[in-house]
Image (cartoon, rainbow, N blue to C red; front, side, top):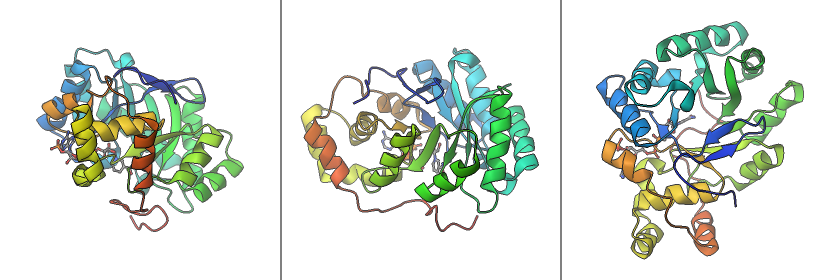
Length: 278
Ligand code: NDP
């Protein structure tokens, strides 16, 4: 197990960049005071990783939240993603500039291809590689890539993606894909770690809550980290942002980790990367 220490602890990507393993998700956080407050609260509390995307239409608010916080830009791991309609070589380069402008930053820590758009993602990747070579991005990666997408991409790429951000929770553990990513040195990252709240009702979460005196949300996030998976729970409420980070004073045992794994039923809350049409 990788060592899990504190809210600012990191996993090391294959290019040596350190990625904080707990971040704040911002999907559906409104691009107004809501996202500004969420980002500011998270950073002031001690988070050092914020996940956004051009598709969330809140990059401007995320940027304002970073500025409003007490944390310097260079101490925050800022992640964004290129949206499907912007994919392709030139259009990705333009989308990247627009993202920097919205966020009002001059580099990104991680830039991801949001979805594997057929016939386009290889050109998109070439643009990410160029930006990476030019040191405009500290790390580049993908999201929603299955094994066959990764193999296809890496067949012609000069860089192995550093991260694959996927839907991941107890009902969708994707063990084969996780193992594949581990074997290639690609850091696995969980989106919708709570399955947007659906997993809080699991009996095992209630049992473990009693045993450890922790909330279902905290148990789930602790399990993500003990699995070596970066996780980015979303909340727009500062009390939840704070409690979601209170996971560094207990440890699930191996049987509990295995039990949470064993609940897998290949069930998604989001779209299937092999069958999406947006
Ligand atoms: P999550 O599984 O993180 O669940 C978020 C929901 O849980 C919100 O409704 C939030 O409500 C609620 N919540 C958060 N903390 C608690 C708590 N302690 N107790 C009770 N409820 C809680 O879902 P997301 O889909 O938002 O995924 C997380 C992040 O992953 C996104 O925000 C985004 O950054 C990323 N993502 C990436 C995708 C991709 O394709 N790459 C796709 C989807 C998400 P409230 O805000 O009211 O607290």
